[in-house]
Length: 484
Ligand code: AHR
Image (cartoon, rainbow, N blue to C red; front, side, top):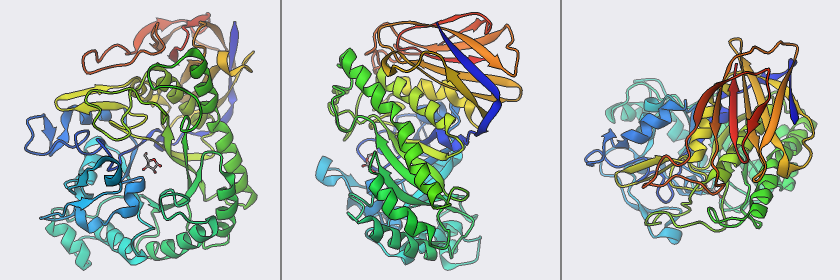
């Protein structure tokens, strides 16, 4: 039996709701076919957006959505996405999937999505193929008060007199790679140049700098000192981690137990990425104004099982294994909420670590969606320290985090073992545990279980009452939330 110690007096900090953020890029089937079906579609929609998806997304309290990319952002001209007669262009991914960008979804439509779901907007600005003035104009168009500038009047003519609320602006995407293939020093200088012009339009928004990929700390060592010696316009350092991009974690659906274990180890390494990058930020005394932003994370399976017509680029099926990666990752973010201010799972629908799969009239939720639902009570709560006995072997370990809000405790647990149930007991330090609580469980006998258009409810959570003072069994590969 393992004991989970809940150390109530040791508060870590407030869990920023934005840690539970999303990402919608113009890539494959995320926007078109996924989110957007068009206003004239026979598929139920709200102003062109798929109604079923909007309603289910709203139910998990999406705090923030990043848009329009990803790599797409580095070839994006915002003017293509406003007003009438929008142009069709090759988009970033045309060489990969042969699709073209119709620009049906642009700034106004995306902001409508945010308004409908209650999410804040996080815009990713192009630093590779447009000038700082171009981005300044986008900010002017979006943020200038009603009736002031020519661009604010153009926004009004296009149907939105009041300024949009866009509190977060990314300055470039993956500039170590497709975003200009820059050296860290070049990027850091470019960031300083762009952001000094962007800040001139609105100094209240947050600017995020392009951070490292996976374990490439050299980028951080190169970029951070140059940002530290600038005018402090940087409010976030954005990192990407796709935990099975390289390596041998097998097929998205048809994997072995060994491949399950390998992926658990790789997912757990998010903790090391956070700690090492944070140490570099702290070593340059930036910790008060520049927190970490993990604005792309999830599983990028090397082999992706075919899904329906499999017509979308980077579309993959999502099993209990992906759900466990979600549980591990969100627990890590909660435990490091003093360092991480935002995270955006990649991506919302029909792409990589998706919460939804949609095609034609079909729209289903993946096991990952249910984890976001089960964990949503952590948003805005105070994280407390946790400690688990006999937990050193990753393959049989428990992933845990806990938080308190309004006098209630929420404990979220993943049993990483693909073969063994775990018997656990709770021990509260600094608080007597009550004898009644509610438990949600996401589990399936088959670790490969997933939802399909034909069987959308193969993996769904169940709920029951439990006694926090008594031992609890967590099935193998099971994810549990305990509320009391
Ligand atoms: O999420 C898909 C792609 O992965 C994004 O466009 C890019 O930023 C990353 O490499």
